[in-house]
Length: 194
Image (tube, rainbow, N blue to C red; front, side, top):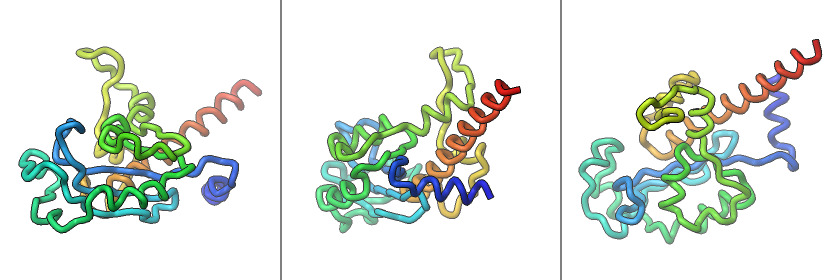
């Protein structure tokens, strides 16, 4: 089947190797907030890192807690980010790191993804694919990961807004976009050939 072929092709050493990363945080601005959870999965959906993170500065995050349900009690005995950074480095070194809203997560991990081959934004790619105009801001409207996952037929196996679950959803959306991009290129080439 073509699916088996594409999976074998992805393991070829000359082709990019992808990992998918997601964070849950105490708030939206990296300079004033902390990471509470980090998840990284590989291209086969295997978990490379799944950990709560003890915050460095914040003691409460009521608004964010309402979204991801990570309480102070859950993270008070978790490892600190510094303890997890060697695992992060090992997971991303020489890999293409795919993140839904990469600008957000990379701000929290400033400098700690430097060993990656590249960091790419799945949200920007999905925004281009979906193509919904944003009349207020101009350009195209960004869509949430939940929306993108639903649109591409992802079946959640756990709760959205848990880091590994969101990383798995990002992987699904990325695979969908890669497949549709290849499909579109193939169709345009075959159309030219006729």
